[in-house]
Image (cartoon, rainbow, N blue to C red; front, side, top):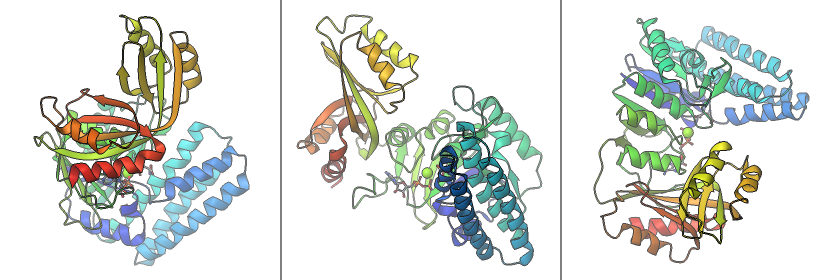
Length: 437
Ligand code: ADP
Ligand code: ASP
Ligand code: MG
């Protein structure tokens, strides 16, 4: 059994939905995870934003515009009047729910309810499309099988049990369809796995159900060796170790949700990245195999804040770092990079929500300096410390870029540089030029 996830662009129009339909038509017993049609999640967030601004009129206008788009998709997608009518009934029902939701007062919970409608619509459209083709697909609501705990972490025992139960209840099915991204939380409320979270759903289901492979189908032929949105001439990487892919995803390679490799790695289920626009392309295979002596790819993570704590006294006396870390733990803020010297410690965070409180407490330990709008540039590959020359090559590439921090040796797979936002593109291009040319 395989789990196959198709992203927003892959189901972004009637034509694309038909295309995916062809790709999955003879996938016996596979689980197909779908994102919302591209643009829908953003539109739903805009609707939710209008509710937050108490602008119900705008919320209704936006809902009307989105509904028209779905009406046109339905018209194009189905051939028979019977299926057009069936789809219209389901989608109109979802828009009725959406309008009812917008009458409530805004809350984060309401936003999650609103945004969940995107995946509900795409999966219903696909399921009916397959039925029209005579394929016996069964739609399994993700809200029944995916749950997160009070810390926002997947409740693996629940997912394994409930997903199995749901599949066993439909042994007659040719294939199963479910929503990516959406889930329930420990209180049973509708929640989600954060933006781009459909990849995570697929990886969780594949890992916990012991799939043969997890396929992430998107709009590009696999993981490229640099971010194609900023660098020209990037090329696909054919093989990645789980750790390399996890580092790239976490440090900004948008093709994968930041934490989606973790379950696959833990349960040793290979992940294959494939291109819906070019299904014959080889893509990228992510598994527990390391290609020795190779730098594989570069990625960048935006919106990083660097914090330096400096003290005249013996700063790194034992117990000092513990005090620093406790402050971040208290304010539930995770640290990405860290470097130390005898008089100071620098670290980075990507979530400024609690920064004023963190800064106030850190100030009791030393002088605090904050640099905003920074970017982590992460170089990934076989960076085991006894290999020679790779860190030098990366540093040489960045010779003319001011570097605020360097982190190396934390894992065998990465070296990270902290640079200013305005130097990001230059740094990415220089690294591609020097490392891959
Ligand atoms: P989906 O909607 O299918 O989830 P995403 O937009 O989330 O697709 O991810 C695919 C996009 O990720 C690509 O179109 C590409 O622009 C971007 N991307 C960023 N970094 C990389 C990379 N290293 N390799 C491939 N794609 C990347
Ligand atoms: N639809 C969600 C998003 O746009 C989840 C996903 O596409 O993975 O973020
Ligand atoms: Mg994505």
